[in-house]
Amino acid sequence: MFKSDFLLKQLEDLAKLIARMASLRKELELEKAEKLLQEAYSSLNLEETKVLGMDLTQEMGDDPKTAFFRLELIADLLVESYYMHGNSVLYLEKAKSLLNFIQENSSTFSIEIIQKLEEIERQLNN
Image (cartoon, rainbow, N blue to C red; front, side, top):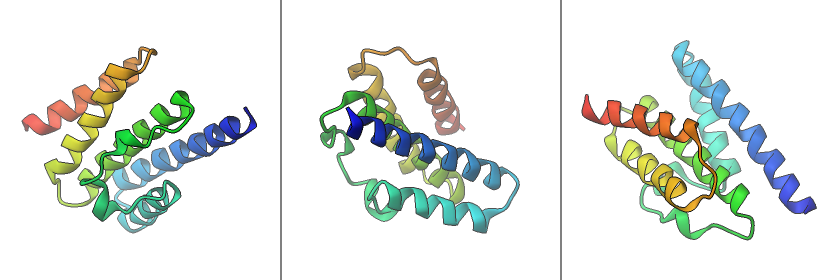
């Protein structure tokens, strides 16, 4: 239980970092946003250059709640990578697949994930 709570707290902190990074990107503070992007990938023990080729759904761990939250944060990072690195649709497609995996396998309904999927679809269709 303690380990799960600790991991959840770390993921919540990471969610705040991602929100701050998105805000910096929108304010065109791209150098600061890029540092936070790399910090976020590092805190998840991921390399941005390799994440597109990884099957991240295989690393679920013992606690589904933290695992799904982690996958959602990775999807958020992929969307930010899309905006910050030349709009490669590969980032959006990977984020979409992770969010769809969560929707299909989680017992919790999330309107936020649905909204994220809709935004990704809009970007893919532009």
